[in-house]
Amino acid sequence: MTSDLAAADGPPSTVEAYQAAILSAITPLAPVSLELGDAEGCVLAEDVTAAVALPSFDNSSMDGYAVRAADVARAAEGSPATLRVTGEIAAGDIGAYRLAPGTAIKIMTGARLPAGADAVVPVEWTNGGNADVAIYRPAEHGNAVRYVGGDAAKGETLLTAGTRMRPMQIAVAASAGRRAVSVRPRPRVVALSTGDELTEPGTPLVPGRIWDSNSYMIAAAAREAGAVAHRRSVVPDDPEGVLPALEEQLAHADLLITTGGVSMGGEHDVVKAALRKLGTVTFRKVAMQPGMPQGFGVIGEGGAGGKGQVPIFTLPGNPVSAYVSFQMFVRPALAALQGANDLALPAVRATLAGPARSPSGRRSYLRGVLDGGTVTPLSGQGSHQIAYLGRANALIIVPESQTHLPAGETVDVLILP
Ligand code: AMP
Ligand code: MG
Image (cartoon, rainbow, N blue to C red; front, side):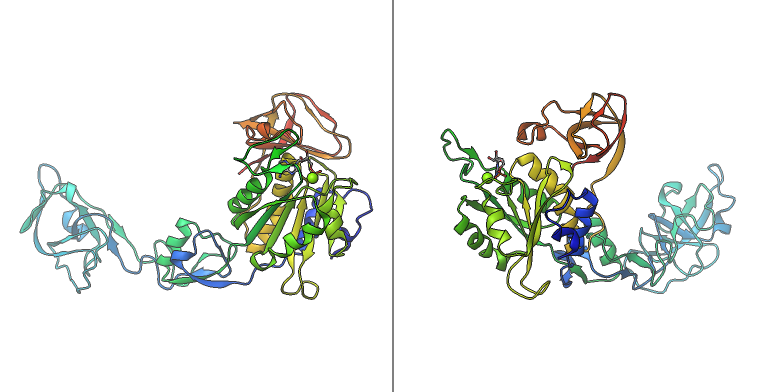
């Protein structure tokens, strides 16, 4: 573990220092070769180059007639150029065709341009003839021709390692001649909620209890960040039960996330109590709001950093704190596991539509609604206010040095996925 994480009793860490400490402890998952049909959403672990030039042969971009531009140079509405049609080339036809001067060959979109032709006259500029064709407009050299290499040269790098295989990239890999690609698999994530007050949603509530929202939220957020994620049923506040519940997940997980049980000193902070004993998970304060108490480390058998050790995040229990902590710390870790370059939350500058407050010395991530260049802080900024979180589409950043920002101020805003 790095010194940054080890300094648990020191002053609060900055967000950046804590992020850096986490990333230094994360190793990307080993690449696997996946067929294109299975690679969607995974991140490339290799560059993909074009096996051939794209296109690999000169071809027509329209249905029409392959001609020599010189033969139709004087064609006009009132005095068409009339050419004998000597054949027809369909897409996929691999015959060797040659165009004789003063003639035309009917050609379809995607069909190879015959030798001797240097332009295609779209069928719309003609009478559509089969034996002879009347052409009413001149076509310039290269008209409606897609030249070899016009999209990419042979050997050109089309996709780089770190790129996520979305539908467009899958098409690129297929067009480059690839049947399979080397990718990092989607990280397997398990989300666990801890707390004696938690009740499964959909079951009756008794006073003093709440429905568990965190495990569903965190699993969904992990999926949104490229993971295969599921939740485990609620873990009670039983110091003897927490570790076994976590260990049970080790075989199925590349990353574990708990929520709750890590506050600043309560007797019921069972996650903290159970994991602190292991010595491989560090708890510390981060100078932010929400989300000040954070824990990160590894659990599982194996030498330091070795196989069998699974990174674990212990996020605070308040749902808004857990959500913001996920986006600030877990999301970059999931990117690192995937070797991905696309998971940073998009940041924009916007004008505050109302005043914003923040505790001194801590960076606030206020929930807000971004609309064009204006961002409105929501009135409910409590860490338990999940209903307000559900109305937000952005996080407004109030820097550590500020305690109050008036309306009209320009602020940094993170756009929520
Ligand atoms: P803790 O971090 O366990 O002290 O919890 C802090 C606050 O978050 C308490 O009000 C908890 O009831 C609440 N909380 C903890 N876990 C969850 C959860 N899974 N879903 C909703 N609220 C939670
Ligand atoms: Mg709790």
